[in-house]
Structure formats: C-alpha cells, structure tokens
Amino acid sequence: MKTAILFIFKLLLLLVLPFIFLIRGAVFLHENYAWHPHLAIIGGGIATLLLLLIYFTWFYGRVTGRWGNARSFRIRAGLAVALIVAYCMHGLLFFNDKHAKSDAVHSEYTSLHPILRLSISTIVFLDRDLLITDASRLPEDYRKMGLKKKAHSLHYAQSNGYTHAFDLRTRQHSEFRNQALALYFKMMGLRTLRHGGTADHLHISLMSHDRPGAL
Image (tube, rainbow, N blue to C red; front, side, top):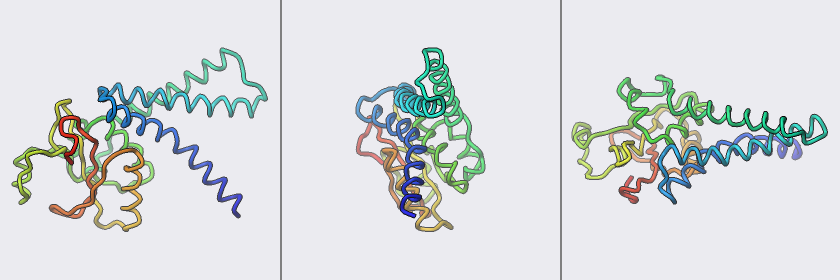
C-alpha cells in the first residue's frame, strides 16, 4: 500500500513539475528582475524545456536502451518546444466564458497580466467550476459596489498596461476546495487574500513594481 501511494505521489510530482517550472520561474523573473511579462514567460519556458528534455531523454533511454543521436535529440527538443509554445499560446489567448461571471469579466481576460492568465489556464484543468468574478476595475467601480474608493489597487491597470489581480468565487464551494485553490496559487508564487468586500471571494494578485506593497 505504501509503495503504491509513493508511486502515485512521484507520478503526480513529475506531472506537476513542468507547470511549476513554467509559472513559478516566470514569477521569479518578474519579481526579482522586473523582466517584461512575455520575456519572463519565455524564461520560465526555457527552464521547463530543460526539464522536459530530461523527461524525454529518460523515457527514450528506457524504451530503446540508448541515449540516441543528435537527430533524435533535436526531435525531442522540437517536441518539447512545440508543447510549451502551444500550451502558453492557449493559456494566454483563450479563456472559456463559463469561467467568467459575466461577459464584461470575460472580455477583461486579456487585460490580466500574462503570468496570471497562465496560472488560471493551468488550474482550470483540475477545477472545472472555477469562476472569475472580477478582474479589471476603475476607481469609481468601488463606489458603485458600495465600497470605499481605493487610491491604489492591483485591479487597476499598471504601468505595463496589465492588471495584476483577479477575484475567484468561493461561495457554494467546500472549504477544502477553497483552501486547496489558495495553496495552488501560493505555490506558483502569487499572493492570495480571502476577504469579503461585496461577497466572500479569493483575491489573487501578482506583485507590481509600481507599488510593491499593493494588493
């Protein structure tokens, strides 16, 4: 029993690692070196490429009993690059409207920072009921919601042109699910905050170099 559990844990870890390398790597480059959003994702993609090459080379060796030649290595590298590019393009450009509270929220998806979009597109594979309730805001939106107007908010567009925060619905979901969701985003290097406002929700944000302490 213990052996089976350990095997499943190792398998899950191997499956999850590429996503951690991609998103967590991009967050690291963004926070520590202020790389351009897409360059940060390319940096995370390079780290993921190296990991996938290790995976593919190990699998190739297990199947064939040898490491292969330069041509087979180029094929493995090309496959890894194609997978990463396809995954990133899908995550950055496509978002199912069933995961948005309204058409307005759905239309705001591309205004979110690219790293946030990748983090969302990854978790929707596991949480099919994920629902974004808010993304981009203007200062007057807080007054319309009956809240105190904020001078600084990561829901506002930052100097790079992107908003750095979004909200997820937590109502009608188990506390275990909500805590697991918060843990996922923390693992990816993002900031999480559970608060009420107009309704109970999970606030997810990416540090902005304009205002490092803002949420």
